[in-house]
Amino acid sequence: SETGEPTGEHVSRKELFEKKLWCRTTNVFVLNSAGEILCHQRSKNKERMPGWWMTHVGGHVGVGETYESNAQKELQEEAGVYVEADQLISWRTTKLEKARLWVREFVVVIDQPAEAFTPQVGEVEQFAWYSPEEILRLSKEEGNWAAGTHDFLTEYHCLRAVIAVAQAHG
Image 1 (cartoon, rainbow, N blue to C red):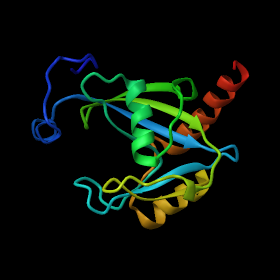
Image 2: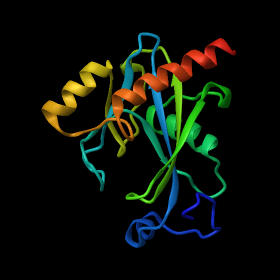
Image 3: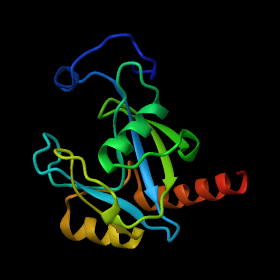
């Protein structure tokens, strides 16, 4: 619903988009200890934004899922990485009026090379680690980037602060 509460109505993804219904989604930002962000190029066969680069993985929260279980599932499906629920740090929920989305955003720290992530066939072409400066440069030069949800540079510093607080408090 517009308030973010489940309505109990179950519709297909196609119907969701056609009727412009409200839905819940997740974004998971993966950072490494160097402060780089794991980015991925969407499949060139995707119905929306094919071939675009993204700074997060995620998806629509399905029937019977919570934001947290969906974030875990999407990270495993799209990148081949399993994380425990307590490794995911929930840092905000955003209402996006134009897209009719409630987005719960998470951050997790994973230190492994980009090649160690497994792209989901039909969803992800490839992964790469980029610094915030590289992401901003590439998004201006190439234009096929969806960096963050709002203002990427502000979000990046918030993500780093969230990680620091979480690490300080165990």
